[in-house]
Length: 74
Ligand SMILES: [Zn+2]
Image (cartoon, rainbow, N blue to C red; front, side, top):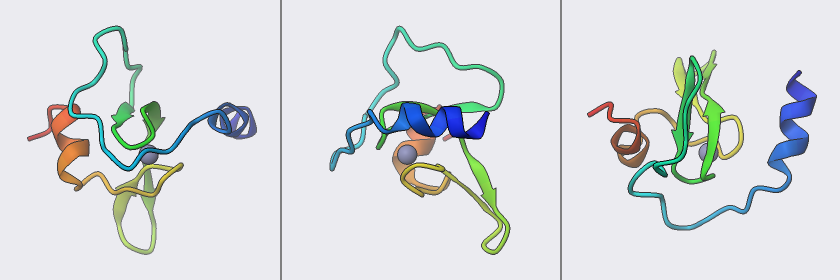
């Protein structure tokens, strides 16, 4: 399951600028969030050491302003 996800992520192009909104055609499943830096649906995973949830691709934390903004967490 996890390996399957990783192979998809190889296609992801990383961006310097975060998305300011989630694309309108995106529908998130349970536990998924939109990562504005990967432009991808991801499940933020809790970092056991730091105790914060992070994007498994780019490691941005859920506390990032744009992560919260695009997912309407602010
Ligand atoms: Zn990301």
